[in-house]
Image 1 (cartoon, rainbow over the protein chains, first blue to last red):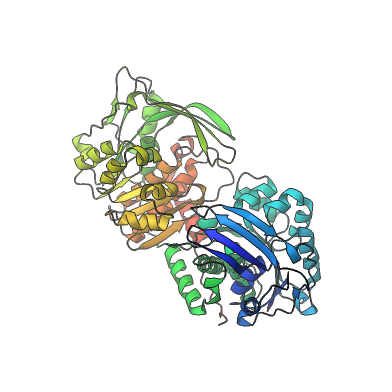
Image 2: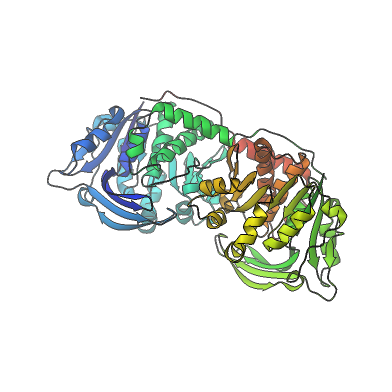
Length: 310
Length: 310
């Protein structure tokens, strides 16, 4: 299988109660690719500027990720984002968003990237997502992210794009905002009616829920004593989730997607243990497998029925 | 086994986006007793006034609940609470709190109530909880609830009480507030150090987490298309959770408590489907068993390993 991801590649400046970084590699496509590369050959598509350094190229190429479609825009600067997290890490304030080369980004996919089996459309303007999706006609499984901004200013474009993909991965509040439904259950029901195979409701520190026509599944976040930096957790989750589907052959039945939720959750749990890509960059397959086993044991239930009084 | 619960018995006036009730039976001990009575003989302890009507007595006595220690305070009025929920049901505003007979409540336990195997201390002033706990020396499993108010104004009393019980059931933010820990995992670790066997972190619509010395478990809320009224959900959860422990013999090992979490979650899910006690009052054992089976199937994971790339 082969896996293409289209999205941002960035430098981030981040401050949390547990430390700060002035300039670290980030961006949705970066976090996604690092996680997904444990599962499949990944081709990220996104622009970088003259300031994109050798260490960043090397990081992107971890586990053989092909960077042929990472476009170096000569004379440009890489997308830069700066933010500060609240004490409980539940909210963050954006200080700086310099789109730079990302402002005029028009994804150009090589034939090899277009020929992917699995495609992830990270959060970019929905008409661009739509155009990419149309270029990848052979893809067996297409998932996408989005954000409140596009729900507010480009709802029709967003809906058109969602109707062309298999899986929508969104924060639960955004699912409610998108559909006007009072809860994720009704929001997901509405969205499955648009033709989606699966809706993933991200719930931050509480984990994530999965809705398909076959049923519902939910998984808590892996319990961590210390979370240092949540930046990129959602895209790392998506990398584990979509990467797993690719490794499993692109089939998106409910049982496969449940297992994909476990891998997404585990990858995200490593991501937040340190700043930016630091932890995932030195992550090993054995560490992933061990935490998958731990998480599955945690949530397993031994049936112990008791007699109920009538 | 026998199960005693000490707490409020009330009339509630509630408005949610899905309807309203001017005066319905409520209170922590009421919701707890209705849920727990599916599992064991329950003895609620709490005060009511002259206005407590026959239908309310009959509701309390569902499935043989013994109301000998429900104290009728002559000349008094029953605790009255009135509140309005926000559109998404995530927050509520209290309009009226008339403590009435609850203001001077000093729990008086008959020998039969003191002789319980399992005890639940619903949210009341922690010194009262402590006194009750000391009267029930034979209890094998004692669980308690509390609230932010007592953390703020009676922290020492609260800590003294917590150190005398087996299980603390609290909202996750309150666990963090109580311990000063930045997350539930560290908060629970601290509290297990106080001598607790188990800490349950209630997460509202996201479900609940369980921490014991043996490990961690978490369970999502049962997915519902319509939630009409969350009032009493926490106490109904506690009734199912503590009730299950009683039915299982009062043993509080990790596997038993995991299963107790399932029953608590299922009971709470019925409670919120309608206003106040309306749904749980006509609930049947078969409906509980069916939803327990459904929830366990939802969260079960079929292991489907894939080869990870190194």
